[in-house]
Image 1 (tube, rainbow, N blue to C red):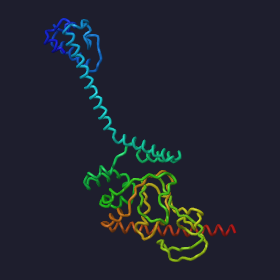
Image 2 (cartoon, rainbow, N blue to C red; image 1 turned 90 degrees about the vertical axis):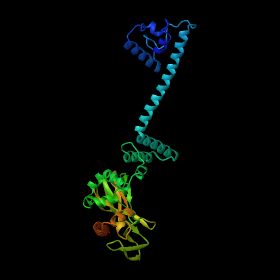
Image 3 (cartoon, helix red, strand yellow; image 1 turned 45 degrees about the vertical axis):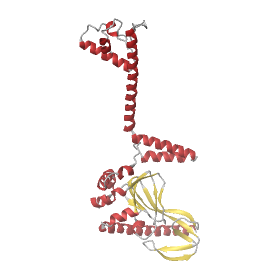
Image 4 (tube, helix red, strand yellow; image 1 turned 120 degrees about the vertical axis):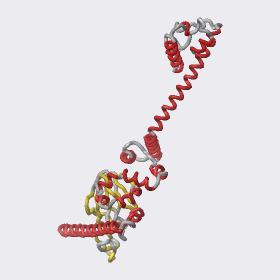
Length: 349
């Protein structure tokens, strides 16, 4: 605006003359001109010099008309730049919290879903707790989409780093070497279980094994009253005889069985693994597993495990020996539990 005033040879009603800047130094003139321009851009007026010329009382004054239009144009231009600035700042903040925004949107979607299904309050709270534990940082990433664009070597390197705490906690991994860890690092999936959640059930087909990152898990079998058939098993869990009758047995609860009691095998915690028996031996699940506390687990599917073990026969043999010894231990514990039951019933009689 100072330039326009100068082109018109500083009219007496111009803000430059009214402010006494027509004879001031160049530095002072530039400073006040910049000050006035910024004031008009944000739409804020100041007393000296104001963003509008308060001396323009005569609307027929040619200069006043020019200055008023210049001022109005400057204010509209300033509002436009102000809107663009706010938009850019909002966009930057929005992109910086993309993962957190996804978590919020997921939570809102989840709440809407639970309301539409009329889920009970207790179950809703459990689902929310799961999300809070599973995504403790309050962020959700589409990990599959991120990993798809990366090379296999880079994916393995990232997953090894992300699961480094698990590999340090589990002695089996520490003793297996980096080659075996690299072969299955991309196949591990994180799972969160609540207290008393049944993780796997005896008698079912095994499709994955579990590694405990934190928490406690109880391994147990269940004793039933069986009315239709009695099956006897060898140390590997294979059926060696079957006969009709009514007696106590150990196995999966079915229509012809009535639950009686639980025979605990052991309680395992951080650094242990379970579920490998049904993956390596020709048997179904030989025991059940239930979380005693909130547990953070990592699962490994049968296909991923067997694929990795093809290149490591010594690890396969060692893991198979562990599975066989566990079957024998469970068999001994079952026999001991049944003997205790028979002895107690004899004393009651």
